[in-house]
Amino acid sequence: MNRSKFVAVLTGIISLMLGVGYLLLVQLLDFRGEMLPAPLEVIPPFFF
Image 1: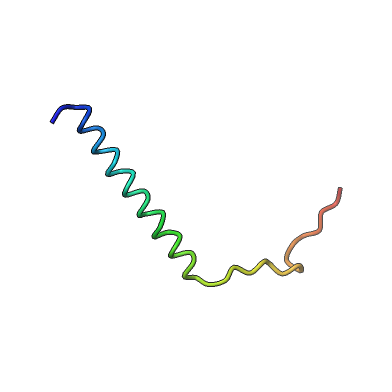
Image 2: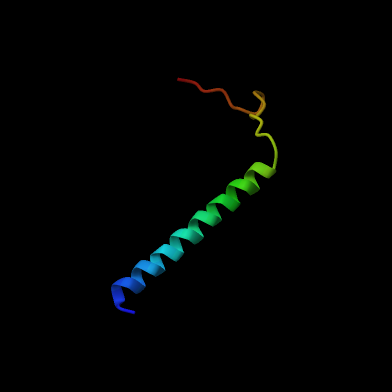
């Protein structure tokens, strides 16, 4: 196998691994449940 084909296969494998990792991360974050905003009492007031 020449070098350019090896690099193409290697980058394809890395790309697939990153894609699957991203999907797993999204599923993990989605599994945690609904995202609720912070209570207004916790947010400090801003003075301009």
